[in-house]
Image 1 (cartoon, one colour):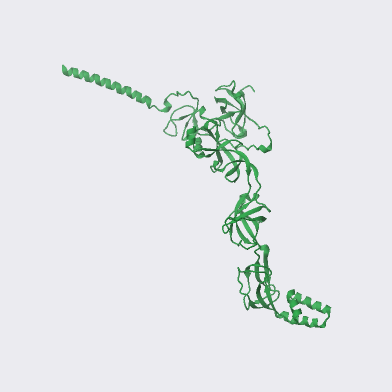
Image 2 (spheres, rainbow, N blue to C red):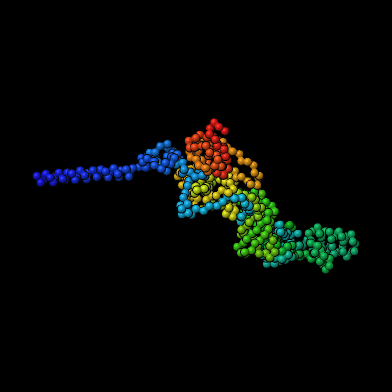
Length: 489
């Protein structure tokens, strides 16, 4: 009897334990149910469902992703901010180190930075030749590269032919016949005798058949072709002497900026040999042929060299001056270059960010010219933009297409509006989210995106789910200027 009571008590306790375990399992199962099986209790409008790993593919109901073993994620209508992008709370923005910069009009210098090499100015090149055939009797210990003064002797040449002609000239001079003397002197000149030698013969009264060849200019000896005992022919080059009072700075300018280089443009050069010193000159010529290997053109700058400190072969950093031109400017660091296009992250109100495609131009001083894609006054992310761009890519956001930047210097013509039709998915006094059809003028496909409202009154009398016709300004962030229910203008 006692054992029977104990068994009944054990069975009752086991039943209670089983019921508790069953209830706990139900509670645990409810607590761990997948997100796509739990009913949405937030009351937020779901636009579509997507796989974060394949954000471009959209689904109209929750469930398992066909690509990955994970639940589809909801995309809510209020996830898009007023600029049609991703929203990041201010605390996270600060932790990411996000820094904003304002797009504004300014002056961007059109100067060109390049490198160059000092060369001889061949406009100051003097060629020394033998005036008659003869024999070298003496050389003056010169060598290529020596710097000599004007009139410095190079060699003594014995010219046998001159001895007989000079003797005849002296004999005619003794006759006193002016006409014959004039003819004899002319003959000496035709034989190549310099006027100074003829005067010496006439003054001394004796023939001088050894002539000293001198440099007509001061400078560096580039070529020296005289050796003791050699025979020279009439017209043979004995030396080449290059002046040093001016030098050429041959600047290698990239082919891509060849249009910004012009003759007469001022240039400044700095050399490692003279730190802190600036040499100023002007572009004297643009050489007609580009370098096929380096894809550069050569701009020849003339520099004064009064003390001969600029030596051929020296390397120089060159800045070619340009005129400042007005341009819409953004920080260079704000540009995200993907290889196929350039993007920036545009900041909107409420911590929202939207990718925008831009076309860029000149760049200088840490700023870059924006040709298309941004408007004056917009704020772009200058630091931390790559993290925000990654978030936008995961969300499957399309970049705002590039549109020509509005030039405030070109007047204040009213912007042209583009029209479309769609369904209101979300609506506030500052923004409207529309599922609209294709916009052929911009090459936009049918999609759901957020627009700014030009004025709060545009939302009056409309609600989520209404089909509307709208007109918007594509400049900057797309802004709706007119909106009315379909069938009414």
